[in-house]
Image (cartoon, rainbow, N blue to C red):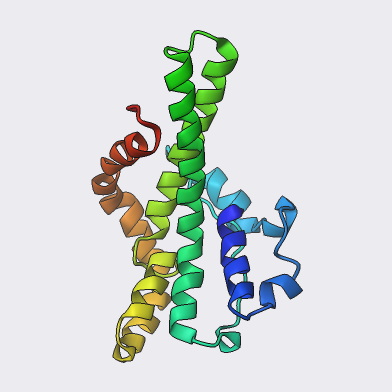
Amino acid sequence: MVHELSHGYMADYLGDPTARLAGRLTLNPLSHIDIWGSILVPIITSFFGFTLGWAKPVPYNPYNLKNKRSGELLIAAAGPVSNLVIAGVFGTIVRFMMLHYGALSNSFAGSFVMISSYIVVINIVLAIFNLIPVPPLDGSKILFSILPQQYSKTRATLETYGPIFILIVVFVLWQYVVPIIPFIFKLFTGVGM
């Protein structure tokens, strides 16, 4: 939800009030539920040993932006950056708790560190996954806002088949991405997974 809010707030900051006018700049989770992405797909994928899902994308109108290309880049980057900020905040909490409480024999402190660690891992995964340059993920919007305009037809083709590419990433390529997650986790928390 914070990821999608970040997109909306960045768009609003850059001159597009679409998300605000649609009532999407809110922490009310009901405003961000997507019947497919928040309910059905997570239930179905959980039967296959992993959970994939998403919140309802926050709308924005690129024609309201002063600079469409840099605006798209900033709006797209806001989501993964918000995930990394959350990972950083909770990683700092884990680091502080481990530094001051050591092995965490205290059940409350241990539970708090465990929950904070899960939040760090989830947000690292969300940031990495969303930075993959496959439509409709944020990484593709960042990539195509940097590439020359001549690649717009390539972008349109990729956007047509984006969900297929996402499935390929999840089932084939994700195994090569997973090993970097413990490294990033240790950067944020100071401890191994």
